Image (cartoon, rainbow, N blue to C red; front, side, top):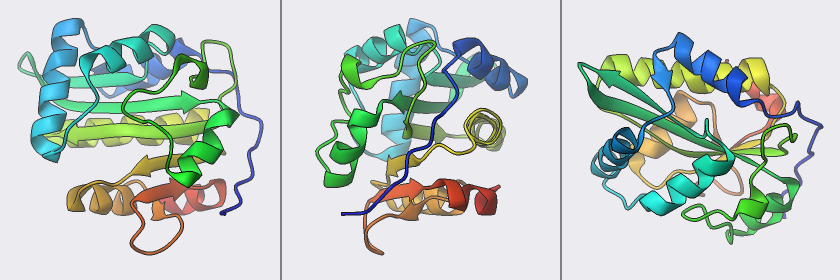
Length: 191
């Protein structure tokens, strides 16, 4: 099994995340915007995304887990990330982590220090939306959590290209792995 060192992270503060996101025109979604973001992500990824109930359950614990970017009143970009507790590392590494419906006991709450970041999904249909959500993701990791191990599943060719190119993630266990990671030593290279 791959060895990952977990370092102590700063406590999660929703206001810090939303303030960073607002600098790039992103904000937590309303219910209508959340539904639009789910549709956008599913359509662009050509892949089933988490059900609305999962998004709502996560946002009750982590209100800044999902951010949307809008143009002319329409959601054109979405970025979502889960701040996870240490208990999630083994399930992520062995493939049993349920990213579709993460449990409340796995999510770091306001004021708790997360151990891991899981990029739940990104989607953008315009260049301004893509630029905004990329900046939000980069700022959260660079400014708030520069040493947090980050993981994602790259389920499409575009996802592999985006995760590996723009975000600096790498296949974790072997070259064709769909589990991608960006570990603290790699983050400076990606920035």
